[in-house]
Amino acid sequence: MFVEKYKWIDEQMLPAPVYALLSGLNAATVGIIALAAVQLSQKAITDKLTRILVFLGATAGMLYNALWYFPLLMVVGGTAAIVWDYRWGQKLFRRLRRNAEAVEGDREAAIDSTEMNEEVSSNVPVRRNQAKPTHPERKPGDSNTNPPDEGEGRTVPASIEMRLLSWRLGIMVIACFFLTFMIIMIIRGTLRDRPRGFNLFANLYLAVAVYLGSLAAASSPNLPSAAGAVIGYIAIFTPGLALHTGTLGLWTTLRGYRWVTSCLRGVNASAVGLVYTAVYRLWEMGFIDESFQSGSSLGREPWWVVVTATSFVGGMWFKLPAPAAILLGGIMGLIWYGVAKT
Image (tube, rainbow, N blue to C red; front, side, top):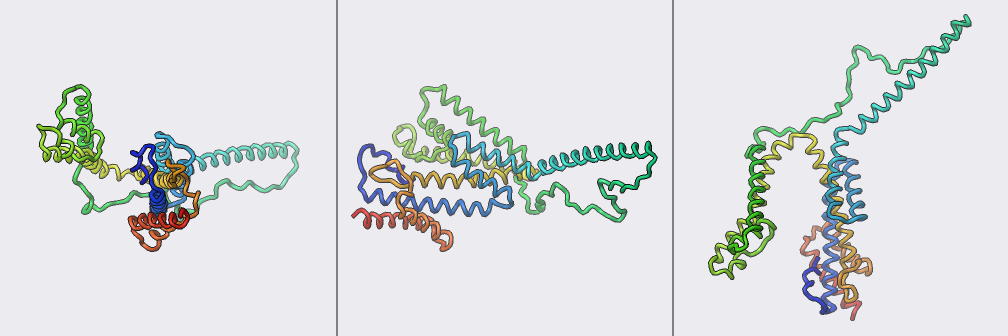
């Protein structure tokens, strides 16, 4: 958060009002992120399954922290959505129930057969009710009104469907991008005396980081500053444009498959749940002071709870912009310092 900007200060102490300002900014930021989580939940939750996935994503993310753990939660969410939408669990349950009913019917038939044999052997007429059929007979005029298990996919009119790229061309674009990615990595690892322009392009292309190419090329006598800016621009935006273009061609084909949309629905719900995890973790490290510069829980001081609630309520019901809410949080932090510390 905002305190990360001051990590270059090792053992020096910041002025006390600065800590109060940063704590107020952090508290307001937590409120804004909580608001974003609520708004995303309202869009992601469409049924009971997505509500459960949002809940499980939030709670599971709070209990454990690892790089592989969060992608696993989203994979589990996508798989659960596929199983739910295709009704595999319901079909399995109905099959097991039918098997149990068949076994029970066979047992009753065996009991009836034994009783009949005993009646015939004893020549004693016994009046008994006939067993009811397991399944009622269907009249000729009756029709099956049950809805099908699998719903119909969303149909896009041909007049507005995007046909800019085919899936073959999309795969080709993505493959070309990864090919150039590997070539640059090989050249970068084998060549020792590399030109400054190539180093600039490789660093930005591989890391997909935003730097000022003109400043990076300023110290090189053979590379003009304008050329460095162009190289930086191309290296920064080429990976994203290539992947976006290739994915666009694939999406026009993949969106017609029901399992793809089901998987994305579950992944989206699990990812929204992780936003609540981020709110919790930021809350636990948002309050900074001279005693704990690495961050502590905002719950230590009730005023920070008020700041968080103010930014949340202001953005939720009074349309307060996020920058204004964060700035208001910083002012409230200074007010707290003026009242509590002076």
